[in-house]
Length: 212
Image 1 (cartoon, helix red, strand yellow):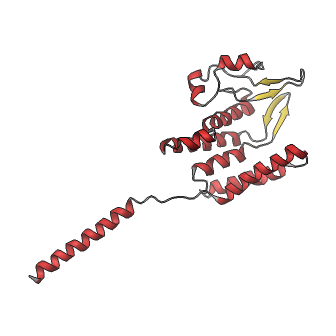
Image 2 (image 1 turned 90 degrees about the vertical axis):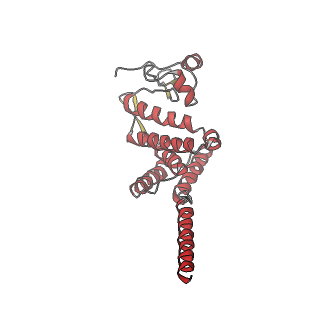
Image 3 (image 1 turned 30 degrees about the vertical axis):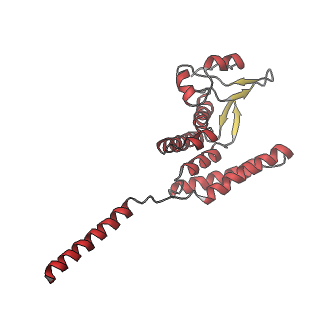
């Protein structure tokens, strides 16, 4: 009888352990947003608001430090959550532009490609988690399109979706940056919260696309 009781309680013990293990394995581990990235993101907004009012801030002095910090955090796998990636993308796309032979270029166009990759990854995760509130609140699909357009514009001189504008030195006009109309459709533009091409061309004058 004692042996039967011992076996019974042993079974209960193992069932209890198994139950605990099951619960633990199914417990979601919440990963917190990176506090340093959030701090840099807020500082980025703050200095731009100040510069817009006073025109006294050396933005690149801050931007360069922030970009270098993001590169370090990426190498340490510390850009993890969707907000981390979106904030990092925001910081990276503040990379110095320059005019070279009359064309708009960037000191490091790859930063825009990395920003695009990070924002795309963030969007995919948010869609998987069905976080439509954050997606809509921060216009994330359009941010993804914007980052890719900037990469193309600063690298090849044209864009895909139609989110970028350039200044024409000769006329003083602000023009829609050249669009390679073969790269996407209005259906895809809608997915990324970008106006259809006919609407864009009706609203804005577009700079002619140069030779590829």
